[in-house]
Length: 396
Image 1: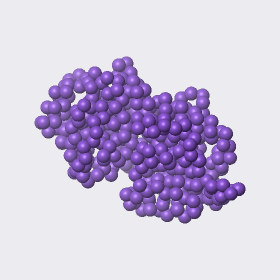
Image 2: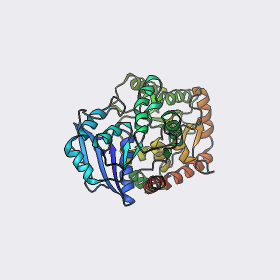
Image 3: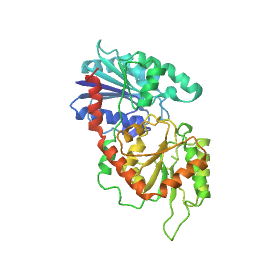
Image 4: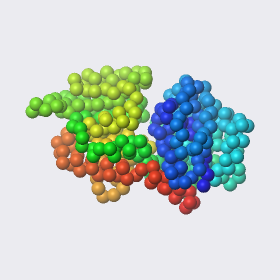
């Protein structure tokens, strides 16, 4: 089989979001299953680094787009420039010569790029919404729904990351009968790092939150919860031991008023509060998770939530919304073993603090859930993901 993967974000050297991380995982997963892969991606003007080959044998075309770096992947991103670049005769010639059997268009931002190439008749094109932007609140969701309905209508099949997203595509975006879903994998480098230890090497002293400091990820819920936990003395030293501490990732490059206010409130909530404001590579993120007692994922909805699975691989269980719209919960709830903690993320800070206190006062329960989560995360690797994708193609 020959597969074309078209994605706005791909290169590790310009990594911005989980979409790019998963795009690379998709390429590797297909390649390890014996598929010949060709990648067509965009690259910001500032990128002068050549990424290491990742399962493509050098078959990568990078389309320069007029951005200094990725700041967004939505309708205001460089997807129009990407499509225009893909229409270049030299690009079209190389891609058509590859003669793919199937193409994967990552997010709606890649579908027009695929259309610009004009693949041969009969090529199966899969729309892969690694994020369903139509699920954004208010007018932004409505605006993105126009693009995503067109993407669903113009492709052979939609492959979503979660049951919740698949239902949304079928019910709201016209994808009934042509939509499937499968879990994204634990990325290879994270799995490799996590397998180097047994998840118990360091003292677990953090209640952590590792999400982007944007309103859609709801980190303000975590901050409010930590303010309440601090008021109750949860982060105070007890019996001479090291105190439990809140930890939050707030990238210093994010300059919004929202992010600045989050940091101000968080740092004020406890003298033990730790802010991580630099980009964390795989090993550094693993270090954080190895010292995390509980990971808190605050949004009510997330297409998947890659950091939930990465935390699990390093032995840190996650508290997440109990409404069923966080994709990672599907993977962690695939059998009878409890592999995560549920909480109503829309409840008051006081109610959330009650739940957290109950959990941290039961170390045996935390240990059992952490063990279950780690096993689930390590089992669903890139090989399993690649086979699941190929099964979808073969069976339809």
